[in-house]
Length: 84
Image (tube, rainbow, N blue to C red):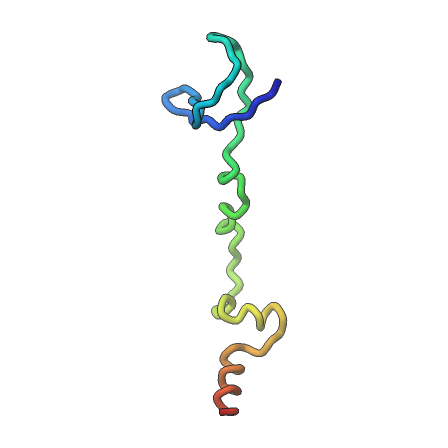
């Protein structure tokens, strides 16, 4: 029978995060499989490691221009001003 519980390792002992009703006898041997929590495995936590220097200073502001070829915001705003 496999059961999964969350635990914290502190002072050399694994302690359950929440009180859980496990059907274990005092002194019973069990096998622990250690895995990091989902939050630590989430690839979004490693996003900064994926950053690349592009040399494009306005990439965040003009991402539509670089992704889809739309006119830059500066040029769009200038056209709107002329039309008024």
